Amino acid sequence: MGMARIPEEFLVQQAVEEDDCHRRRSPSSEVPAAVAEGVFVPPLNFAMVNDGVFRSGFPETTNFRFLETLKLRSIVYLCPEPYPEVNKEFLESNSIRLFQFGIEGRTEPFVNIPGERIREALKVVLDARNHPLLIHCKRGKHRTGCVVGCLRKHQKWCLSSVFDEYQRFAAAKARVCDLRFMELFDTSSIKPLST
Image (cartoon, rainbow, N blue to C red):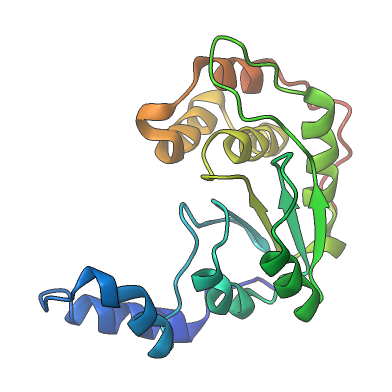
């Protein structure tokens, strides 16, 4: 499969926004005006992980135009809550398959990261037939960070690089239990990357 790229329209719009950064806008008019002007707004904590694999926080309706440009085939949703109806409609209208792995978003010290669910999510992520694919949870920090961190371990990244990437997204909210989970995660039962 060819490399998924950030659409040129987004890059052009981003350059226009950078030129306009000194203009004052009223906060109440920003989002509706942006949508009306055709601005592509990525979800919170959006980033490319690999060719055809992206990560983010929970997509809002203002992010749908941007997500359409990615031509997603699949979404890996890591939260236990039901997917909102408006998001389901977006998936259906764009022929996007939803894979849900309900991982609770608890804080320390009472965290039990379900290793088997992470493995199942990784199987979906590693299957190129599901690409382009978006991995997301609520904020794109902890649950998404653990899945991406375990993917990086599978890709033979050194632990310090895995931890650095996790901390770029989690920032001050980084959890020791997540780092420990990624460090101890056994990738031997995961099949090699599919191409």
